[in-house]
Structure formats: structure tokens, C-alpha cells
Image (cartoon, rainbow, N blue to C red; front, side):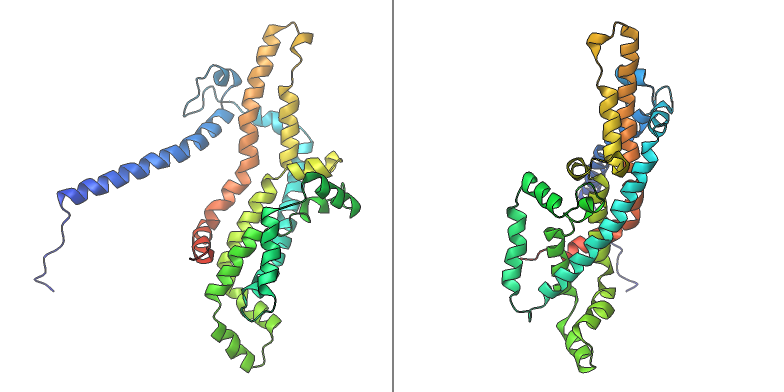
Length: 300
């Protein structure tokens, strides 16, 4: 072993590694530039945005955009509503997904093919917006918190990923061994299957949480009480109200320009405020996201 010559990279290897590094830096910049620009724009003045002077760093730093947003009392109420919808909704989503995915992953379950067909059918066909609205209304959930959570309580795609994860990572020999010791199906599910599935639970939990946090269309359909609006809908209303200007009724051009600058600044501040919570959570979930998607993906 001492006589073995150390491997040395050839000129072609160095060129190849340099090209890979440059390509990686290029794609990194493409990914980071929109994020950096939005953050910089949110701290810049409205006049600098209108004039196009913001490129990478803030110009004429100011907090006017954030002050305008948080000066609205409904912001904190909308934030609390979004936290509730995200937490409770994600919890219900995970429970229903696990309860549906585990039995369908068992090859000894009767009627599994028909149940899978029914689940997958809903991915291709749905009743539409009006029948969904009428269903929520007839169930008595209109203008309630549950109208935001219950209609999307189960995502079939996430259930399919979880089902394949169970099938590939929960060996049937383990189930047979626990049955010999008198362990029932439900006890095996709670005591063995769930603890061994923390990765996929984290993955689908992140998927569901992002979906709940960014959702606003359901609130527009089912909620009429502004006190129950999620943060995304509150911010949307602020942005729409700020951008709708009646030019015909105003003669002061300077005032119109000032409002236009404020509207441009407000757009970027709204993006940062609405995206920041999920951006802070993602780094802690990234390793679970990559591993879980690979382990639970469909195999040919």
C-alpha cells in the first residue's frame, strides 16, 4: 500500500471540475437573485423602485413598506388565523394521510385496487368550484374556520407517496414477527410504522403546511367575516386597495406619483412578510424533504 502512487487529477479532470463549479455557481445566482432583489426592494424607497435604480442592494433604505403593512390592525389577526389554519390543518392532513396510506400499502388488504382507483379518480376529475361551494354550504361550514381545513383534508398525491414509502420501508417480516408476539394491526401501526416513518411525515407535513400558508382562494369563496381571513387574503386586500387609484377624481399629479411609489414598495414588502415564515422553516426540513421524496417516490 505504501508503494501505491497517489491519484492525481489530470488536466481534463480539473477543467471538468471547474466547469461543474461554474455551472453550479451560475444556477445558484439564478436562484438567489430574485430572492435578494425582492428583499432589497422591500427596504428601498418607492421612488428608487419606480426609477429602476434597485438591482442587488437596497437604495435609500427605508422601512416605510413594513410600517405601512403593520400599521393595519388586521395584519396580526390574519397572521394568527394563518397559524391556526396551518397548524390544525396540517395535523388533520397528516393523520388522514397516514390512516389512508398504511392500509393501502398492505398487500393483504381486500379491495385495495378498487379503493386506489377511487382515490386516483379524484385526482383527474372533480365537481368544480360551484358544486364544492354548495357542498360546503349544505354541510353548514360556510363562513367557519372548518371551511378552510376540511375540503382539502387529504391530498391523494401525498397519500400515494406515503403509501409507497410504507411499502418499501416497512418490511412484512416485521409485521409477521410482531403478530407472533400478539401485536395487532393498529398497535403495529402506532408503535412501529409511525416511528419508522418520521422522514415521510416531515415531508408531507411541509407540503401541507406550505399549501395552507399560501392558500387564500378558499377563504375568498367560503369566508365573509374579515375577522377570519388568513394573512394571505388580508395582505391581498391591502395591496388591492392601495393599487386601485381613481385618477379621474384627482388633479394633484405629485400625490398620484407618491401613491404609485408607495404601491410599488408595498408589493415587495407584502411578498417578504407572507413568505418569511416558510423560508425560515425550510432549512430545518430540507434534509427530510430530499430524503423523503427519494424514498417515497414511485419506482418503475
